[in-house]
Image 1 (tube, helix red, strand yellow):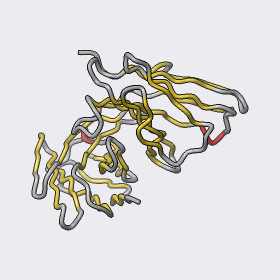
Image 2 (cartoon, chains in turn blue, green):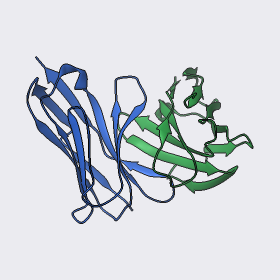
Image 3 (cartoon, chains in turn orange, red):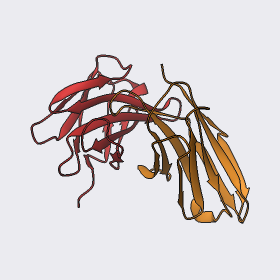
Image 4 (cartoon, one colour):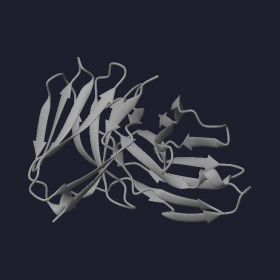
Length: 110
Length: 113
């Protein structure tokens, strides 16, 4: 059974600082996703990573994938308050089934 | 291009009742997946439909069921509601099964009292 571990669960960081969220998964997969969720809202797709060594960047967020280590990272550069949200990684299993990590609640403070 | 539409957005039901939630995928998308999100269990896969057939099912009791229509719209039904069924139910739309992009609807917030 595919298991996805995400850490940390909660992250409080100051504006302007850098940090990384980690996502480990237990079995081979060909797709890894990062989503953002604001309180009471749905999931917004951030990145889809398809191959070993894949790196994608959008603004202050950069995601990477190491399929050999079964590890993905979401790096936040020079955080701003607007990035405050909960971030989920999700790993594709059979067909379209996604197994989600526990989520990382990011709080960016002044 | 319209996104994934879920109705209703909010619902309050009493224990023992049943409920039906609806999901209209993005036009042209034929795969619909359902997820349950709770504070305790996080996001969990319920089932996936493609071409009106259930293709994949998560570890939920038989009280949870679904179907898909020829226009790809999907419904999920929960019978004999329990307090623990209170959750945000999210629907995801994909072009076909196993494609790279999955787009989520706004969700239906179900409260069981």
